[in-house]
Length: 506
Length: 87
Figure 1 (cartoon, each protein chain N blue to C red):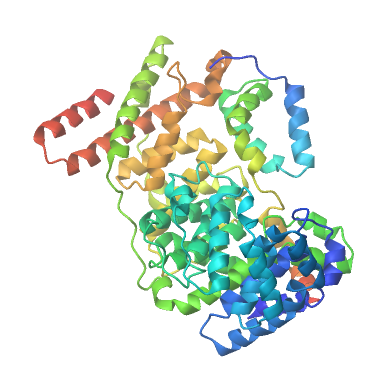
Figure 2 (spheres, chains in turn orange, brown):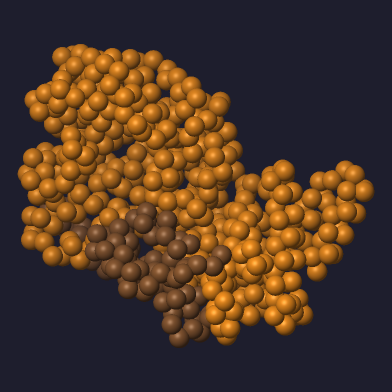
């Protein structure tokens, strides 16, 4: 409710704030318009919570937002430029469904939606889903997303190892619109397990990336998918809620504390709200969603760690991995280095490097912000929760570190982690993606690592060590993948062939 | 894949412009890319390593979100919170 009260207080002085912000989202829509739209959505989604006090607070917010959403300026804009209904229309429709209606403005929106001009803009698939959702909300019908799901990121092999910010938002927003913010079931055309996997990997990404906005949106999406929360979601919620409690607010990734401090008192308040509101709104919607699905999402009946699915993709990876190891070894042998010989007995891990402790040690040694004493992920260790076992915690943090190592190109960390995961026989989808990433770093020469594009880099002191680590990791991955294939094969001949391949890798 | 390396000055200019435009947080992005590899290679001219590592990861650099690190925000949380509540 604090989120709603704060939003209502600030929206009451929106005109004053708009003068202090001086920001345009696009030539037609200002930052103030964006805040109005998102405040209307907050009122709609939180108003669905089964709590009279929250419903009343949501209604107060809706009434405060309404004059801004249905201003004279907006009426003129919609008449002249009907495509602005894509953004300005959301506020009106959300307010109407939240119980604050305006029949005249509704006719204006209807006219704009019927003009055909909203479809005349080139937008990503999730924005087309947004329009579909908006129409259905306006007409009080069930949305028909048609081929949009197939065209969206939900139907791709997207993974946080490669994703950038826009893709992360595309993922979360697609799930918001497809489910009408949790009110409807995910359409059958969307693979719910695949959606869970993508969201889980994204949660792991943001646990180290510390983007609280995207972390919150991922948790919101996890609630909307309709499946019990995974260990990733439970850990993500633990970290987000602890951060919220500690800070007293939820900063957006754009919050620059130096910029904040450089301003006078009035401007500071405007700056702080501008760079906090979106993440707090996500937090507010998430709390409302949790109130509606308490048992499914709390972790008491949470889903366990998913077992690694089988498939052609892993067979292909096994072959590529074997090939990568063979070519890399040949490359180094030509230069007088036997990486197989050098790797023998080098990695007998001590107890302190195994399990959760080992993962925490690796994270703590990171040279990036992830290694700092107050890093977001540490709340999972410093204040453990009964909602995740030690194994689940290790798996989540390991995935987070794998993603981080790939994105930051920390090949030594990546190789070390892969070696540990495959030795333990406990790989996840992210482990498989990380192995694939490492295999993709192979040059035509057979060397692995972008740093070896230049010949002079071959003579660096650490190159040999890194090559041995990478060989150890990929050789272990080959064995792991062969064992996995052997356990599902029903044909003895095929099993012998895979074993021979695995032996050949060593 | 071989090719002529980009001059350090050219890359420096591009990165400075991206940093000034707050598209890239140089401290979080470039340093973490360059330093581990440079220290592993112990090359005297770390910028040569940095150049082709940057080329492999430039997509991340130009699309990454920037702002203050969470640690910096935590240190000023009380002031920020008071400011938010002052409205």
